[in-house]
Image (cartoon, rainbow, N blue to C red; front, side, top):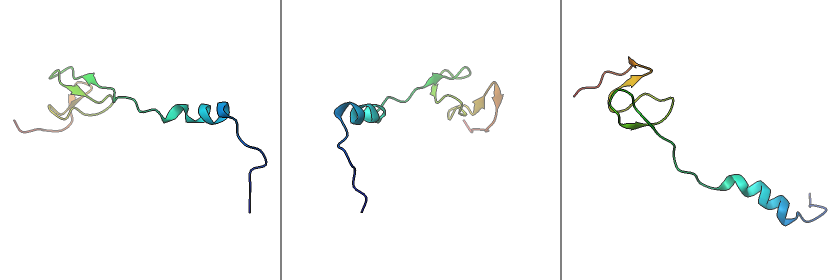
Length: 59
């Protein structure tokens, strides 16, 4: 059975865990309806992306 030869130090373990933190979801303002939306995604309220209507949404 494989067993580590030496114990990992705190610095090695903590540097590996540095990316474990949770960050808030980034959002942008839609240029059409000014609602928050995810970057590089179609706006869920108006259906526009890059100035073009992608999804037809009933109002």
